[in-house]
Length: 129
Image 1 (cartoon, rainbow, N blue to C red):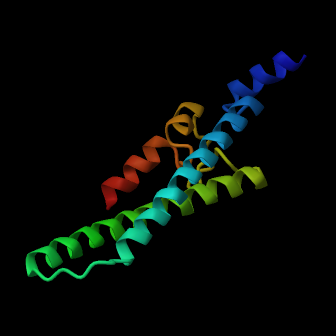
Image 2: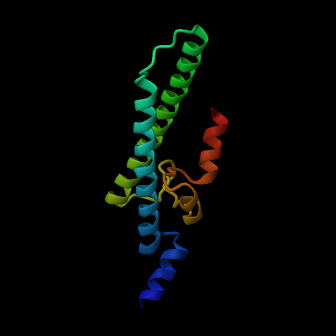
Image 3: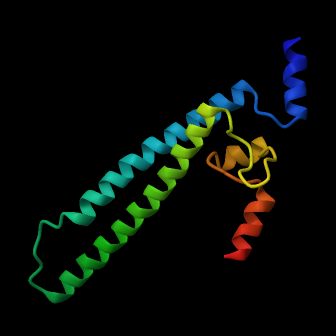
């Protein structure tokens, strides 16, 4: 009977327990990776220990710091998306489009576990930007 239930769930495009567990693990691994990178980029980008006597060196260092802080900002934004996905898993709304309520295909979630919309909705959103 369990196999039948999983088949029905697949037909309804719902995630199986194995899918949810694998996606949760992927989200948690990506989160840990981003936290480490974010902290490193913030640390290096905000704590310049050397004072450059040469104006060109100072300009290069400032550009590098700006790039690191920009990366940290992007990482922070992705961390917010991952935390949102993990919260949705906890409350049972993970894997459903926030716009239409349609199930997000498991293939899309495997590629982008923090996806909030089905692919065609995301494409339309990107076109409007």
